[in-house]
Image (cartoon, rainbow, N blue to C red):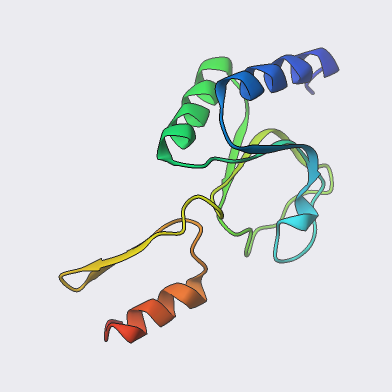
Length: 124
């Protein structure tokens, strides 16, 4: 179990190193399709790939637990919550592209929208 002092130290490191929206002790029930889950120590929306990479490097270098989600669909989170940093890709990673019959979707794109995008382009 992480101490309150260590949790505060980790939060300060995260706050100083990363840009983007952050929430502290954020109930994950607000971010999952099943509407269950206790709090995340820090809930983070990276604005771009650079900040996503920085969050991964920070967590690796400082031994901060890391959990990454897209839109929170089909995941179950304990009522005890998640220690460390939860990275939510649902805001900054919404890109869709299609080239030469190959389509790519960002991690935050909902499956139903991706399927509509494919259908509109005659892809399956």
